[in-house]
Image 1 (cartoon, helix red, strand yellow):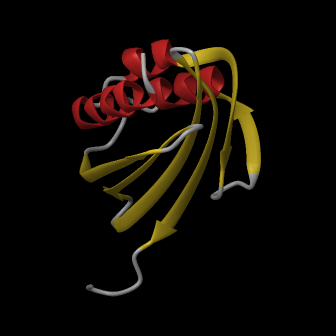
Image 2 (image 1 turned 90 degrees about the horizontal axis):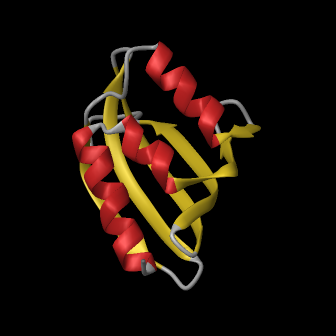
Length: 111
């Protein structure tokens, strides 16, 4: 798969809230860092937590930008009464995501 193929697959999984597809996209040893905790964990343990909480929220305005090292995904969601905006940086090797850094920001005004 190309990085463009991986980006399209990621966007589709976000739109469909498909945790099983995310699980398949990540390398088993992939690490994910998130700005909300300033900590890293394995992608698999993060996906376990998502499933334990009942799945993913709905994502809107999903946009991807392909790079030579993978892709960037920008999207928005609503969680706990707040609008959140995400920027996800995903590194790809072959047909697997090997690393993710996710920045999550709370919307502070009405736009």
